[in-house]
Length: 171
Image 1: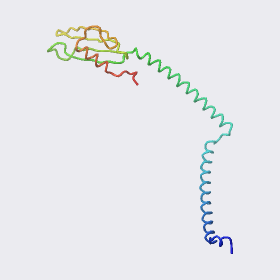
Image 2 (image 1 turned 30 degrees about the horizontal axis):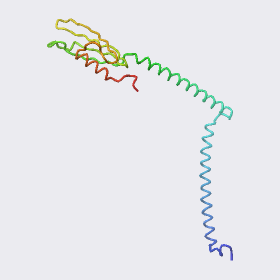
Image 3 (image 1 turned 90 degrees about the vertical axis):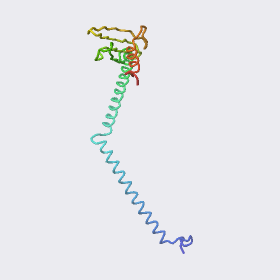
């Protein structure tokens, strides 16, 4: 009477279970071997033509290139910031309102052109054409979106439309 008989386990079934377990472990080892070979091929491809020292030199060179690129990005960011500051004083909002200054004069030859900076500083240029072909031109200064002289309704329309425009400095 054997040990397995005392426990109540049939030795034939135990051998079959152990054999199946052996086959599963063998298949698992094969799959791990294939996985290791796959990674070895990738490593060989990565290290192709270089030894450890030259690979280290290549990696250090890439780090130096990254540091230089980072410095250039920082320099560019500073330049962009400076240009944005200068851009506040550049004309960037425009609006034109065309109209007929006199009844019966067709073609809408009269106009008001509003030109503003980011801070809504600028001017309104108005050209009024009369019936006999003459043209009168006026310029009115705009400070912080306000005129300190009387504006015509057409000039007010041009000013309001220009102030509504989005600045190129807006993010």
